[in-house]
Image 1 (tube, rainbow, N blue to C red):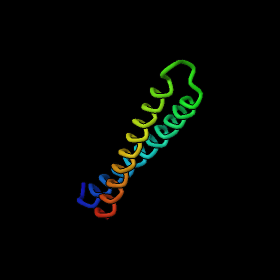
Image 2 (image 1 turned 60 degrees about the horizontal axis):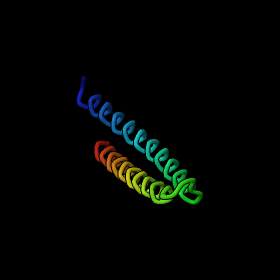
Image 3 (image 1 turned 120 degrees about the vertical axis):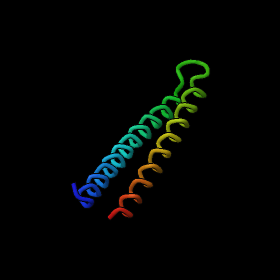
Image 4 (image 1 turned 90 degrees about the vertical axis):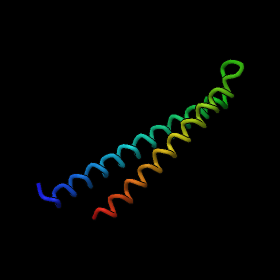
Length: 80
């Protein structure tokens, strides 16, 4: 395998990982929104706090995954 081919493989892997992370982040944001909706209509005492806390965690995970995806995109640009 030539250096150019190896570079292309590396670029493709980074692009795939970035896309996977963006997809994961979208799901996490959707799940966080569902938790926030449930927090607005609690079924039992304390559910509002629990759901809001879970939503906050999921938002943080999503933002982290988006940041990693952005870093991978920058790495791809540098490799090209």
